[in-house]
Picture (tube, rainbow, N blue to C red):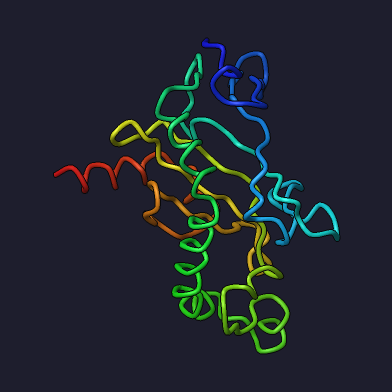
Length: 199
């Protein structure tokens, strides 16, 4: 395993599971000031962990749902990390604008009664109103890349779905998919997009 802290800061190898079924994962923390002021979603299953607004601290994880015996930080992860840090405010705006465009459809999909909708999924006029509805929990640097830059997933907790959350898969500044939280870390979504964009 490479010395990944020389390449990306604040990462460590964590082992999950039992003796018979151990999984090694590289993960750590990252501070994205662009997402400060939103809900703090560092609790279990992306739940709210404090009444205070987020300071932008989120989890970062290498590999998404791909399980490998010896996970490592590759050049494409480093390049994606640098890209998301340098362009974080632009990327936040792109994500929120895409969510705003899809929000009415999501409201219809969830179909809350009027009182529940006002509480969990109210009508909004602009993207700044998402501050009270969502919070970034994790950033996933996937093991799928194009032109030496990894796909990146953004995993959110949201008021309208405590169980499944919200997920956004990106490649650089392009939205690949918006869906439940697993849309942010499922390798096949990135692979499918990569295949369709290289044909």
